[in-house]
Length: 162
Image 1 (cartoon, one colour):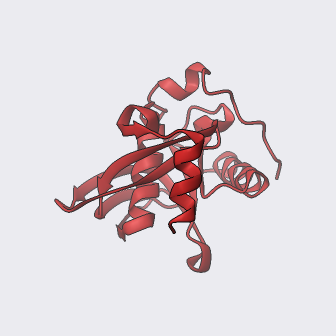
Image 2 (image 1 turned 90 degrees about the vertical axis):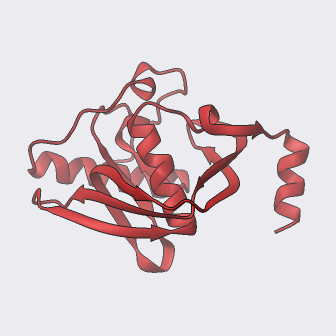
């Protein structure tokens, strides 16, 4: 549909809990298309409605070969005890990266485009992206969860080691 402008990291919509979707209609489909277009434009791995200034519990995660995962009203049902620390960032906070501990496996409940409840299990990087996105929808930036914010030199070293 349209590439939207990202809101700055200081925008109030990013620090508030996004509103639950209650109407599953063409407006929701348009919002998802706008998020998708913006996600590709920004070359992001995931993007939520608040990041484009819309207080709605909607997000898209690019799972690469598996395609796009649309999340509508996602909520965590279970999390594994096993945790992994990895690097995270956000398109709303350019050049800021931090180490964040997240569960290795999660079960998520969400809605599909028609409003039906769905459940999915995610592992590793996809679980991390979903947890990151749900935090965004709850108004929690990854920097609040980070055990350490990395310097530019540390980020370079991090990528050199991969």
